[in-house]
Amino acid sequence: MKALFTSFIFVLTISCNSSISGEKTTVVAYTKTSISKKRILFVTSNAHFYGNSNIESTNHFPEIIFAYHEFIKAGFDIDFVSPQGGAIAIGYIHSSDSITKKYLYDEKFMDKLENTYLPKQIDYAQYIAVYYSGGGSAMFTVPENKEIQQISMNIYEKNGGVISAICHGTAGIANLKLSDSTFLVANRKITGFPDVFENKESQYFKEFPFSIQEKIIENGGDFIYSKEGWDNYHIQEGRIVTGQDPTSASLIAKKVIEILKHQKIN
Image (cartoon, rainbow, N blue to C red; front, side, top):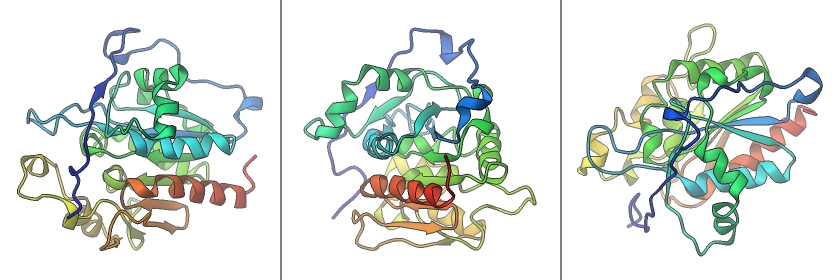
């Protein structure tokens, strides 16, 4: 039976030596002529453990790099943000994969993960899409972060941008609210990692602040998923794109790119 922890998990925590707790003095800023609506913001988590337990959690490296790879090929620039800024933990690394190797040994890329931006350093006007990556860490610190919520909704409503999320990253969009106070997911088909593939008796699941599936339904969304799983399942609802599990990372990115091209983003 397929389950969240069936594959080997390699945990790598990137140490941040540039500053204490990821603080930086340089704020993200670009001139009007350089904006060009070609920037995408990746949302990641600083959590190293599942809640208050001693069970290590990480951001899902393949979910980051396979989407990143597609966006970069299409000419987009990517920035990373996390609630506390600075270094994030990464895991689920399969070093035999060629794309994984490419980015694992890419110094400039890994530096981005070592030095993620603080929410206060992000100017939403620079971005045309948001991508919430997954992994167990995505369940913590991100869903309740009001600053990141506001950034995402400004990109969606004020910039006409796209909101996307994968697997446990869907937890990050579950509580997003539009300017009229309705939930973003309300009356929309949304997917993410479903309860049927979680081990509900395990301590890691008991540490979750909520069930993604239940929270989406509670907030008015129509949570749907593939019962087979690990089959690239993803959904587009207008300018919202969500994927069920890691296999959908590349396809989510391609779908976001397709939406942006249709909008003739330059």
